[in-house]
Image (cartoon, rainbow, N blue to C red; front, side, top):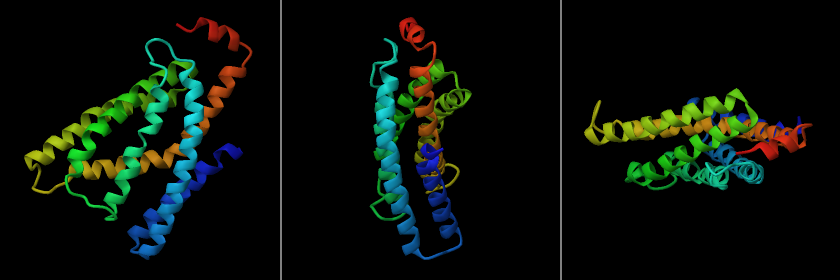
Length: 201
């Protein structure tokens, strides 16, 4: 159970920051909460990178051997977005700056969760794969609508979608990384581990 502690800390911290913001609480408290969340995210992503290295080793020629780690490293995209979203960095040309790396993030996400579902069979990873594929259409669609001024000028659909999606994304990150580490451990140490390794395409 201790493996889930960082994820629960992250979840509670983000929820507290959101509640404080909705209730109009002190901005200093929000900054502290988001700072704690940011540090926790970095710790979790370091662990995720180590786990991802183990998963990449189980990949095949359809997975280049770095896809999971690439997806984990691309979390820098939403991490650099949050200071912009909360007015701590310039927001000009936000969509132009973030659209391409966001697309790359979801492309690697689709391939990462497809590999994890194939290896471990967990239905949650299939859901993540489908979700990432849908985001590949939603984010560019929001970008186009913003550029066209629909439904109104300065509607910022892309920014709102980015905000909501990545809040949820990071709330789930800690728990997801713990599940990946558990599934990888079971896969490698299970009674049929040698057979699995030998049977990989």
